[in-house]
Image (cartoon, rainbow, N blue to C red):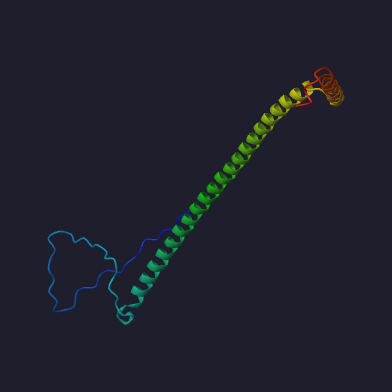
Length: 156
């Protein structure tokens, strides 16, 4: 972006009016611009002075607009950088969630394999049914034997 710059042109300073004393300067006078220039009525300005001040105002306005455009561009670049960082952060977060989920699934698989191994070692339904029938028969035989061979057991 090229920066346009115009140097102000000023008319020569007119001589002071008669009767106004002129004090010679021993050293060059340094002009420091004040924060706010005193306002002068437009009627006192000459035509060329108005053109110079309008030219300076237009030039200054153009520089301010250029500066504002550069600031807006810089802000847009910073905003896009921040958006890219947020996108990368969201991507990393989702990846970490997937990894955590995969590790949880792997741990769950391990636990399920352990439970399956334990349950496979347990007896099946037929074995449980057979064991219950045998237990019932043995219990009945023992009770009958006790009643028959121990005569004082039921009398008490």
